Image 1 (tube, rainbow, N blue to C red):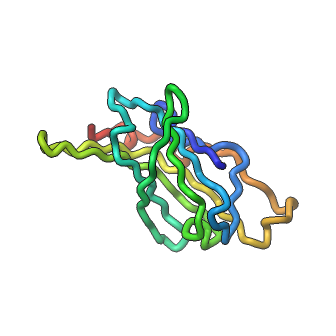
Image 2: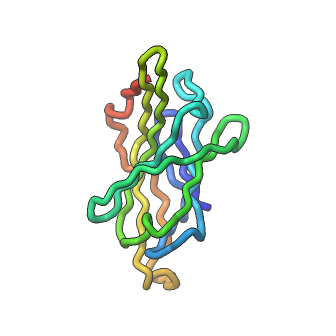
Amino acid sequence: MYSIVMDKNKFLIKSCGITLYQGESLIDKLQFLIPKEYNGFDLGTFTAKVRYILPGNVSEDLNINKESYNDTHYSFTLPIDSKISTIAGDVTLHLIFLKIDDIAKKKYQMTTSKVTLTVKPYETAYNPELGYGECNGSTSGGSDEYDVVEF
């Protein structure tokens, strides 16, 4: 299981050693560890989606389900399937949390920073000389666009 953690500023930070290979199919999972509360809202009451963009600009939104991880975090998991690992290259993803209050006619929304995972070509899967996963954080440089929360 590969882990990505959201910090207090909505930045996604990936764990060291995440290495995905082209053609991986349901053999592992991405785990997103998200604080249970953000800005006074319980994120467990929101619908969570992961939006990913594959090489070639192919995009998809997927609903992800939560599980309690510990006293302070939820765990959201996403199987690594053939859609994410079809093409070698960089996969950019971020999380979206949505909640609609029909009575008050309000839509609450929060978007995390983006993080990039590299899918390596299949031929590098068993060749350690060609490198393993890198340990980088979010691709966002901390711009102000992530301070806007439509809660």
